[in-house]
Length: 177
Image 1 (spheres, rainbow, N blue to C red):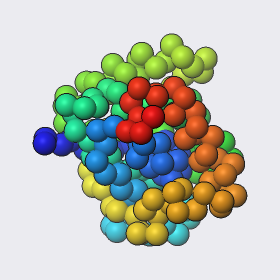
Image 2 (image 1 turned 135 degrees about the horizontal axis):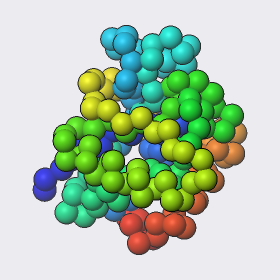
Image 3 (image 1 turned 180 degrees about the horizontal axis):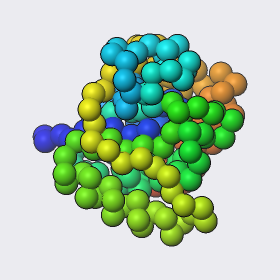
């Protein structure tokens, strides 16, 4: 199997991870940090808004099962790409919308999907588009956070509705419909 990697920032990484883990063709999702200026940042540092990093997920996927473009279509549906440094009540640069590309081909697809997604939003999309410089893995306790903590108030109020929305909109792409 050939695999590719997508690196995406759309607010809290727990939300993105939970949605992408449900998709057929996704083999791994790792939460982490990208787009900042501090080496090996911690969650506390990133939340302190001084490192410049966004919370991201790295999605490893089989492009013969799900395309990079399909991953981006999901991305533009499960978060609000029109709010700068914010997703709902989560405010700060770590919650910005960004696509960190791994190749010129990904950058081209990202530009196309961003333009197509704009038709679904009244306000301009502010998603940053830039080549990935460095991905820093998040602490292991973030792995499978939603699956391990479904009763956590944040998970119940913020993550669960996004997962539910994605399952309804992308039922044909689910690993287990």
